[in-house]
Image (cartoon, rainbow, N blue to C red):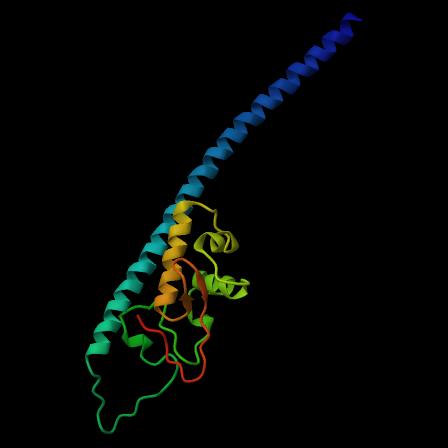
Length: 182
């Protein structure tokens, strides 16, 4: 029976060796995964920061436009559309345009469209921490605060309403109502 125990010990040593080998591979893959996640997070933060800066610059540019009357020559006609003037607000792009009659969420960047859809689908007003998991982000303080900033921007641009502080709801754009302005 000595050979049976020797065979079991040999198999156990082989299995232990395989487990050690797989653990090393797992540690290597986990390290690469963590590096990739960090890179992804840096890129996401950079994109969000650029979007916010552009939006803030656009808001400043549009505030200046509101103060300066536009001069149109006698023989010029201005085409009227829901998007008229959006291209003048800034060189570049306005990440979150002000809502105007005739506009729909397709004018918004994807993340803002997702946020508006979540708020519209909710049975009542929602908080930022309720929106975060529904748009696919982890419920971390940074993600919640970033989303709260986006919700506030959507309120300022007339896409959403904020009744009580921190509670966001869809805006009901009825007839005779102009856009909400900031």
